[in-house]
Length: 166
Image (cartoon, rainbow, N blue to C red; front, side):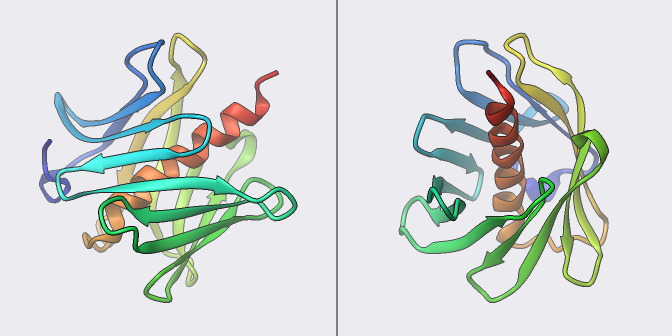
């Protein structure tokens, strides 16, 4: 996989195969990350690591993000009304997940309002899964949390799409 640090433009997320529960994130023809899921969890991988995300709770649903190798807790996403939410990262920082009208775009922003990542819907895969592009803001830190934020964002979009299926 291509290291995320080498990505210069937009990232495209697609679901290339109808039979697989998998998104592939690409920079041009290069794969930079993969996200696959089953009924109980999602697994993300990129050139520098792997994470496991698990949706838990009934009365208080949330998503736990852990390092796949060490099991270390990396963060916890708490949804809010209106399709947004807040992720509390293990280092103490918090980021907001914001969705806009008709959920055509989603953003990770700092608590000060600085946009870090923008996810833009561009259409549906053959099985009805959303696909789109991701823009990394120039001011976004390229640290260890960035790949997890990309994959968590895709997983949250998948969860919303899945919850609207009947």
